[in-house]
Image (tube, rainbow, N blue to C red; front, side, top):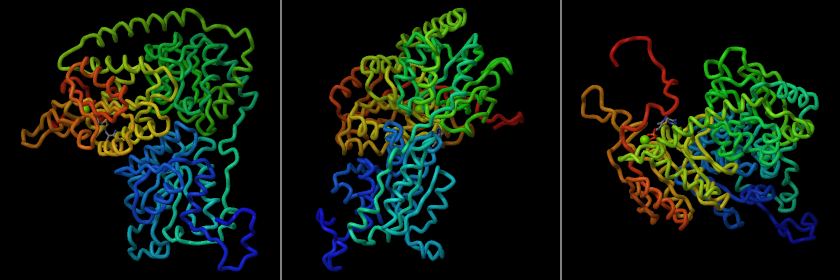
Amino acid sequence: MSAAGENSATKPAEERELTDGFHLVIDALKLNGVETIYGVPGIPITDLGRKAQAAGMRVISFRHEQNAGNAAAIAGFLNRRPGICLTVSAPGFLNGLTALANATTNCFPMILISGSSEREVVDLQQGDYEEMDQLSVARPLCKAAFRVLHAADIGIGVARAIRAAVSGRPGGVYLDLPAKLFSQVMDAEAGARSLVKVVDPAPAQIPAAASVRRALNVLKGAKRPLIILGKGAAYAQADDQIRNFVEKSGVPFLPMSMAKGLLPDTHPQSAGAARSTVLKDSDVVLLIGARLNWLLSHGKGKTWGEPGSKKFVQIDIEPKEMDSNVGIVAPVVGDIGSCVSALLENMGSDWPAPPSDWVNAINARKEENIGKMSARLMKNSSPMDFHSALAALRTIIRERPDAILVNEGANTLDLARGVIDMYQPRKRLDVGTWGVMGIGMGFAVAAAVETGKPVLAVEGDSAFGFCGMEVETICRYGLPVCVVVFNNNGIYRGTDVNPSGGSDPATTAFVKDAHYEKIMEAFGGVGAHVTTPDELSRAVNKAMDSGRPTLINAAIDPAAGSESGNISKLNPQSALKKKQ
Ligand SMILES: Cc1ncc(C[n+]2csc(CCOP(=O)(O)OP(=O)(O)O)c2C)c(N)n1
Ligand SMILES: [Mg+2]
C-alpha cells in the first residue's frame, strides 16, 4: 500500500506501490466488516487463506467444504451479515454448493467464494485442471451469482455480493474468482480507491400504512387469533418489538423450530404444547417471518381444520411470498422490525384481549399435553429411550439458557424440538426448511466461533455421520462444543433386518453399539459413553463447565424410534399390494 499522503500516480512507474488480486479481495472483505472466513484450502485459494490470516482475519479451515458452507450460512443467520465460505474450484465448489443452496432456501445470507480455472480453457472445454463452468452451475441455486475478471473490479464484485446476500429476503450468493485474478497487479492507490464499503446493505423496508391498518383490523376482529413466529422473525433481531407486540396483543403464539426462544417456550402465551389445536381451531393467523410451506402443511388440509375457516395475515419482506399457497387477506410487506413496530404503534392503548374461551381452551389443552409429556419424560427407561435422554438435556438448557443448541436427525430432531424448551432468541439451530442432514458440525463450529457461547449439538447417529470428521476441526480450534450422539444403531431405528434374508445389513441399520466417542478422543478431545440419563447429565454438565471439546455417545434403545420421526406420512405409498 502507498505511504499516507503521497500520490503514487506522480511517481515514476518503478517506484509506485502495487497491490494484487489476493490483497484486494482481503481488503474488500475487511472494509465491509468481514472478520471470519470458513473454508478448505487448495489451488487457487491456498494463499488467499494464508494472507487473510496474516491480515488479521480468522480463517477456519474445515475438513469438507459442505461443513464450511454450513458454518458460513449459520454465521449469516446469527449476525445478519453474510457468512463467507471459501473453496477451491470444481469439486470443492460443488461440495460447498449444497450449503449455498440450503442457505438460499432458508434465507440465510452467505457468500460462497470459489476459485475457478482459466476462463479461456474452461469455455473451450479443453480440459483444464478442475475445469467447470461454475458460474452457470451456481446460478439457479442461489440469489445471485457474479464473476470478477479484473482486479480493479474486485471491490465492486464483493460489494454486489454482500448487498445481494443481505438485502430484501436474504440468501446465498456465489462469487467466482478465477485463478488469474489473484495474481493480477495494479497500482495500490487505484486499488484502494476501487474498493466499495457497502452503505446500509439491508435497508429498512417500511410497510405501507394501509397494509398495517388492514392487518390490525383483521386481527382485531378475530375470535380465535394465533401468531406464528418463523425463523425470519428470529433473523430480524427485532426481539423487543416482537415480544412487546405479542404481549400487547395477548394473542397465543406458536414458534417454528428456529424461532423457539424468541419468546421463552415457557411464556404463558406460548401455544407450542397445543400446536394441533391452535392450527385447527384458530380463525385468524398472523404469520411473522414464517412461510406457508410444507412445514405448515401449505396452509390447508386437515391440519388447518374446516376449509375456508381461516384468514391469514402475513408479514414478510418478499412480496412474492404472499398468496404462494393460500390467499392472504392482509399482506404486510416490509422488513420484520419495521412491520412489527408499525403494528405496535397503531394498536392504540385499548387493544382488546382475545376472547377468554379461546385462551382457556388452549390452556386446557396445553396442560393436558404437558402432563402427558412429563409422564413420558419421567419414565427413566432402560435402555434409554429418546424421552429419558432428552429429559436430561431439557434440564441442562433450562439451567444454561444462553448455550446454543444445534440439532439434527429424525427422531432425535423431532422429539428434541418438542421436549427441549428454549428461553432466548437464536439459540436453536437446526435442519431448517429442507430437513437436511449434515448441518450439525458446521453450525456448531460457527455458533462457537461467532458467539463465544457453549454449544450443545444433539445429533442422530446418522446425522452425525454426514459431518463427523469436523470433530477434528472442533479440537483443532479448541471450541466449547459438546456433541451428544443419540446412538440407536441406525436411521430411525437400529432394529430393521434385510427383507431378503441375505447377509447384508438392512438399509437403515448401522454397526451395532458403535463407539462414536472414540472419534473425539482420537483428536485429543473428551469422549464419554453413557447409558442412563444421570450419566448423560453428568457428562454434559462436565463438558459445558470445562468448555473442552467433548463427544458423548448416548446409547438409545434401537427400537425406540419411529420411521422418519414425525413426518412418516411424507413417504410415498404405492397402491399396489405386492410384496416389497
Ligand atoms: C442430506 C440428506 N440425506 C438424507 C436425508 C434423509 N434422512 C432424513 S433423516 C435421516 C437420518 C435419521 O437418522 P438419525 O440421524 O440417526 O436420527 P434418528 O431418527 O435415528 O434419531 C436421513 C438419512 C436427509 N434428510 N438429508
Ligand atoms: Mg439414529
